[in-house]
Length: 286
Image (tube, rainbow, N blue to C red; front, side):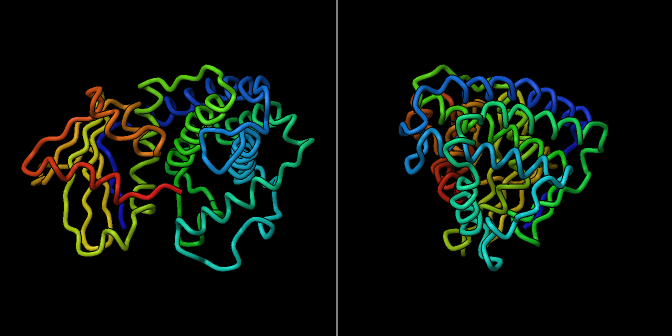
C-alpha cells in the first residue's frame, strides 16, 4: 500500500481543512445538545443516537489526546493483538462508545466543543506532515496531521448526519467540506480499507475526478491499492466523475449508489465504464 503526494499546496489545503473543522465543531456540539432522544435509532443501523454521539466523543478524545496526552487508558479500548485493519477499527469502535455512560452522554455537546478546541489549539502552527500517533489504527499505520485533521472533519460531518437522521434534525454537508475530506483523508485511508480478499487478482486503474477537485488515481493491483493525487498521465480502465458530497455519501455507505447515479451525482466513462461500481465494492467501510 502506498500514497503519493499532490501537486496542490499542502499548507493552504491544510489550513482550509482546519477552518472547516473549526466551523463544524460548534454545529456538531449544538446538534448533540438538541438531539431529542439519545436512545432513538440513528443513521448507523447498529447504533442509537447516543451511541453515535459517544463514538464522536471518543474520536475527539483520541485525536486531541494524540497531542495533549489526556487519555492514557488505551488498554481499555485497543484489541489485544494487531488484527487486520477493518477488524481492529470495528473492535475499537465497539469498545470506545463504552467510555461514555448515560451521564457523560448528556453532556456530549460540551465535551465535543472542548476537545475540538483543544485539538485545534494544540495543532496550531504545526506542519501538515507532522506525524500523529494513532494507536487505535495499529502500530504499522502512520498518519500525518493533514490526514488526521481531514479524518476528524470527516467523522464530524458523517456522524453529524447520522445523529441528525435519528433526531429528525437538519444537517448539511457542503461540497467544499466534502472536497477537503476527500483530498485530505481518502488518499491515506482508501489503501488501508481495501478489502484484500476481494482485491486479490484484481488489476484496475480508476481515474476519480471530484468536480471542483481533487483528482485521485486509484490503482488496485492484486490485493493492494495505490492512491495518487493529481497523478501524471497513465492509462485508466475506468473514469469516474463525481459531485463531492454525493461521492462522500456513497463512499461511506450513507446513500445508495443507484440513487446518486440517477441524480447525475456520479458518472462513469473510459474504456470500461461498467467497472465503476467495483471501486465502492473493493473499499470497505468500518
